[in-house]
Amino acid sequence: MSAPQPSDRQKLTAAGRVLALLDVFSRGSGSHTLTEISRQSGLSLTTTHRLVRELVAWGGLEIDETGHYRLGAKMLSLATSSTSGMQLREKALPHLADIHRRTGRTVLLGVRDGAHVMYLEALRPHANYTGQNRIGGRLRLHAGAVGLVLLAYAADEVVEEYVENPLKRYTAHTIGDADELRRTLSEVRDNRYAIAPRSLTMAAGSVAAPIVNADGDVEAAVGMVYLVERDDPQRFVELVRSTASRISRSILQRPGPPSPASVVFLRRESSPD
Image 1 (cartoon, rainbow, N blue to C red):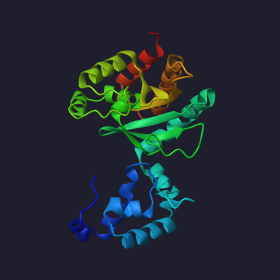
Image 2 (cartoon, rainbow, N blue to C red):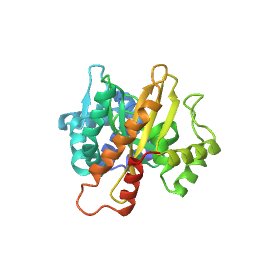
Image 3 (tube, rainbow, N blue to C red):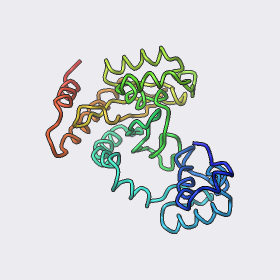
């Protein structure tokens, strides 16, 4: 989303100005200075300063010791109480915490948001991470294992629309060819997991598996980041798959009978290959 042009700013309502400001935090690192917020939202510095001050007082934004602003606890509280994604996160969190405790590796929970994966949870060995796979962060679907899983189980028209657009390469190992991506997605569906080595950074890779909902659809994916020089990703595959299966079962505990498709999927996940 591009910043509003001068003519657009004159037309914005008070609510529109607040929304334009908040939209800045859906891009980049999620941490911005006052000047960056003003430039990216298209609002004047005076207006930005006033709105930011009001949002900080309300709890919607927080400021750190370096003068950077990020979304505050109030936003997380609202999201938790109102979105299905946060309800999924609540179901998944005990299982994510278990695999994080057992491995000491970064563990991720993501859902598809258009052409991106949006991360609902990220448990890390070290705090204060602000990269693209932070909570609320977004990353192109082809750039990591979580996104590859979500794209592999998306509708055919979603996949075809995705591969028609340029595939950004983050490293030399990122999938950058449409035919290669199609082959990879087919393998993900056959194997029921994805491994993405060095696709985002040369030092790390990721493993992910699908989470199925009560309707039998893949609703999310659980992933783990491994260190290329230290870890064999294959040793994490079954652990990630079993975690995804446990989260899927917890989703089936929602009121109402599960779809036969979800039951078949979980039986297949539980059976040896």
